[in-house]
Length: 121
Figure 1 (cartoon, rainbow, N blue to C red):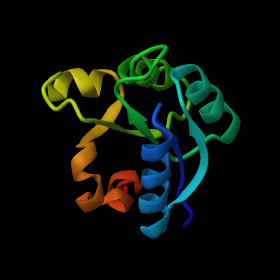
Figure 2 (figure 1 turned 30 degrees about the vertical axis):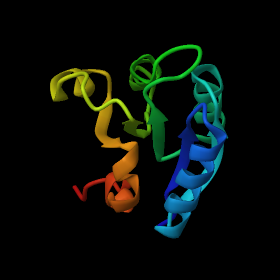
Figure 3 (figure 1 turned 135 degrees about the horizontal axis):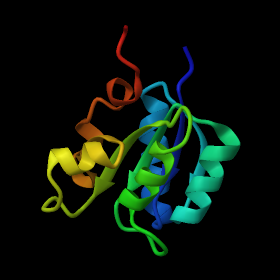
């Protein structure tokens, strides 16, 4: 089963690293975005299974993007990432439609495939 991902981060170096890690774990990166507006457009165009979403973007924050997508039909699984580890509660993240949070410095060790694979029903 192919799992398609959109990577959203304003740092092109981080997008490149994240894309490499996701691809190495058997996931397919179908688009990259540098801000919230292009992230929304990429998700609507590609209908990915998942979104690796930076918290701090130049136009809107990642939680705003997550909230907007969670209101749409069939939203992707959203994994929020940031260097900022001291912020919202798990409940606030869930209300925004965020599946999980992975600190950027822990991305290499994270079970990325597991985070983006839907649980068996």
